[in-house]
Length: 112
Length: 111
Image 1 (cartoon, helix red, strand yellow):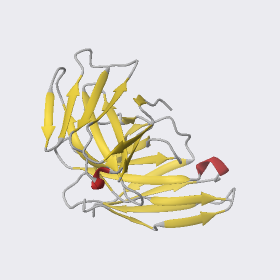
Image 2: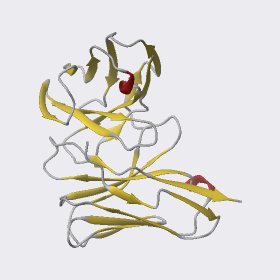
Image 3: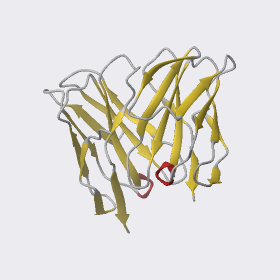
């Protein structure tokens, strides 16, 4: 099935550093979402974006919906140990019956 | 805590068998979706049910089927299991808003 192109695949950073990851698609989406998944858990929604060009923050997290509707990025500022996990982007085209299309994930590892 | 629960947490089956996975949605959530997440991959959309009717489907064969019940519970059934069906199966429920709330998943191993 289709998956979005998400990069980087993994990141090894020091605590306190800023993080940036992005997602691209060959198709347009009307909604972009960013999820975090911890081991043994399902994905948890971090940020939802509904309009091209939209920039939205949730605490230390900031995400943008690309103007072409084919890309999105997520930034995490001043990383802390609990930020460790796998981050997924997801796009949705229509009103919901088409489901979410996910990226392969970015595995964030924070070195002490 | 999303209010979405799934059972069982883990399951082992052999090739050719049939399996039923269960999901209990948040009260009031009329939409439930099922996803398959292979190891190291993002979730893949299987299908979606709204008020007990399938109203969306991803690229999965007919041996993947589902049911949704009036009490906000749902099932994913997979017939004629194949080795490649080994994965984490996630359900997600949604109310009138856009946000989908995922359960913790059922990890299926097919031997």
